[in-house]
Image (cartoon, rainbow, N blue to C red; front, side):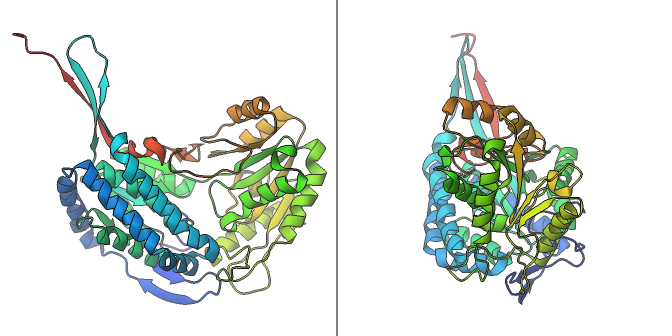
Length: 479
């Protein structure tokens, strides 16, 4: 499992050097370390989760939903506590951190209200007798989750899977241990029996052992392609179901400016889509593709918006761009940008690290990026936007699809038929028209190609880790 380098692992460090650590990325201040779960305790932890599953699965689904609903209430009530932890541990702007707990709570509430309905049995038409499709839980599920949305990413697994009757082991990011512990406490305080939701501070080297454990029936991961490949290999060898939500290099295609409310409105939408969460979002608009007739004006407008961004302390409500999650993350982004510049890319604005403490990176626009550059094919996980010129719609689609990733895509166009035609042609799991890629509890989230497989959220998310079991009944022969 040495390839398991998810967002939340410390890039460039060995498994021996890693620790679950609260380290303020805005100042570099080391706050506290947390010990790894001793390897000799893994079997007991997994066994307790399995024992809990044997009881939890027999609870009425409506009672399981009540626990998740209470967790939603508690998460909302503790929003400020969570906000402070998120900003401290991964550097999110405090204004955004204050929105994440209510957002996560809305997902839990959605499943509490709709999950039982999603799990209802389905009667199938047959020629004789009866056929019913029932949804049964699988067992213990391992969730490997990242730091960039440390509540949202967890609850979009926990909410549906706990209601389905599964139990959850959470291996959260190594840079947000306090947030992970606070999440576990929410479900405990909501009334989840011991073993139903368990935080585990796992070493990377122990993840494989957990996946291989006979009681573990599935694994879900949000992280890098390398992490997903490692998890998929282990899960495949052991015939375990897995869901992978991996990276993205999403295109933001501009076919006209009116759809965004004019030049400045369209530039603002692209900037919002690229710079939210300091650019650390898998579904951010990392590649902007503009028809050539609008290209020069658009690049100038986007550059004005990027140049006006206020970097600073994420606890200051006036700050617009905080630090990246860690110093290694900022260094990796700097290396990708430097590679592009060295090979001939044009820097429109930004391009490097500001002369200040912390894991900051300037909001940066690159043009003239070519396939020989890392920035062309790699995910840029930070506030760096690559802008391309396209001659027409077909050229825009070819550029958009010339990526190993396929998470989402955005099309801005006033003509709905034309916009839909381009959206349909994108090799992606999602396509948004006239709005930056977002997420809603009722709509599925996931990708294709190296962006992974499986879906989270909506009714699809709750069905990923259930046994869709057929009960086929024929009348007795003497009837």
